[in-house]
Length: 278
Image 1 (tube, helix red, strand yellow):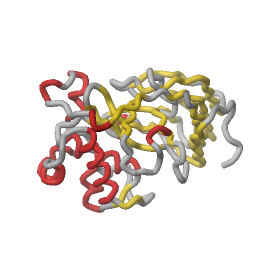
Image 2 (image 1 turned 180 degrees about the vertical axis):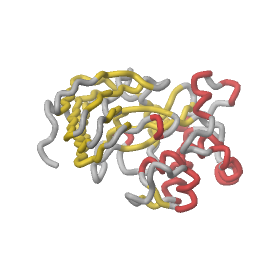
Image 3 (image 1 turned 180 degrees about the horizontal axis):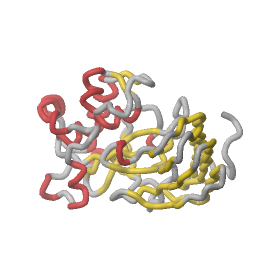
Image 4 (image 1 turned 90 degrees about the horizontal axis):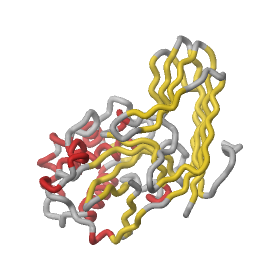
């Protein structure tokens, strides 16, 4: 099975007693096995690994006093995705959806699907239900938006992005999720690492529930779907932020990597097939 080496280095200058929740660890799922991983925190303030959210995201929780703080995490992750012939993947009528996916039909903080119902049915209602319609939503999102780093912030929602027509990976995912939900297709946000992403960074993509499982999509087209390594999952980015900070801290360094092939340490230098990974 293919192995992907992922990791990050994060550094902060802390100016008051501060609590951190770091959501950077590769998820452990039946289709994504963490073969080896390591985390280093400096200074050695101690941390706890906890699970948060309905999807059980792995979080490193710690508290530190004023001064510099650095975290380095890396992992070798074996990928075992299920590849299915996409024309055979159909949508589900609402009454046949499993109970556990129903919350991913609801509007959320960044995905106001209730405001997009008329648009989505006018734009995609004539298309055949199934995987191809979700792919059409991805294509439309890609064509409507311009990828522009710094054009949005933590307040920007799917409707904001649709108006201004610019965004980053998180925004592409939020808009596609909102459009899917407006069509009664369960969709959820995924934060992760991505092979081939330029510049390297944490990446936001999404999943849609079709047939009997979740399938990965990336509306940015910036990374191959088989090179996406899951970190966290939620209703939107509010549930899967890579760092939640309660206190006062300023980021001074961020390095993120994802490379095919196993490694035992962090780097020294700065279609038709559907993929299901859960």
